[in-house]
Length: 313
Ligand code: TXA
Ligand code: MG
Image (cartoon, rainbow, N blue to C red; front, top):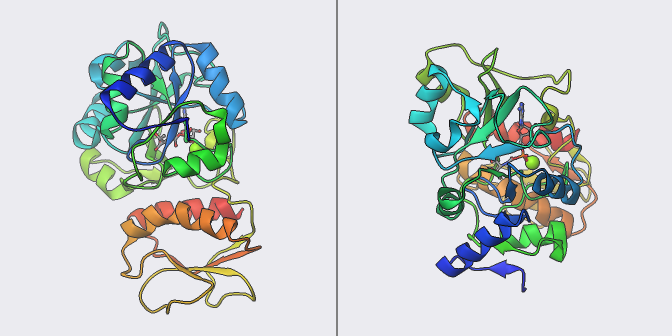
């Protein structure tokens, strides 16, 4: 495929050129693949929303190389710094106050007072961020409300050749989107991820809640239906319905035709890595419904259950 670019110095330089022209590219991160564009350019941001068919009220995460580059755009405090030291670069996104004179396009944060920021760990995206003179807005590289991509084939499945430049970084390490934590006002996890509530609580020494119900559009990305493979999903099933694909977890489940085990070993991290690939596979095999067993609701299991609940909505 001619829109796929292997990871090489030459291709990284090409990618930077595309970004400097305010065009968008697909990049790997350690969580999922994203669509990257110049966060300071409204023209680039418009392209992202358009190709994803994303509602303009759903803000994007702005990705930075380090603190130094962030300082022009956001107001940060001690809570942020504590977490930053422990978890960044890595799969944690912080919602913080945007600076009044920040150059971030107001389209990128849906004209809110806040911006969501992240310092990704993947070396490919880091090498882009390091030398560019602007941060990158990078939402997951899927059509709005769909399943996030974890390799280049998923990105192609979502957009065909409408994305002209896809940087190949293999399969992503984590396979689920970053944890999003609100630090402006009430400290609250807006989207669970691989970095969990207890780890965050330990660092902050403060109570941290998880947002359960979405009342208004202040966090519109937490739309009720999301991560959907486009077929009905039923959760907490003990036995599968007739002809349903059955997503299971752990070694008590035997292998079988309609059985898709997220982790035979019962390892939640493995299940996190396999969730989206499994949903895509089931859809592509032509199943009309999905049943899922109960997945343990601890550690990254909380994020897995969050995605499944929204996919099932
Ligand atoms: O792991 C990730 O975070 C991936 C990779 C590519 O970095 N990105 C990602 O972006 O998942 P996206 O756009 O698919 O999800 C961003 C989430 C949405 O739920 C959005 O509503 C929320 O972050 N968000 C962005 N800005 C916000 C803000 N100012 N306040 C509250 N929520 C915000
Ligand atoms: Mg997304």
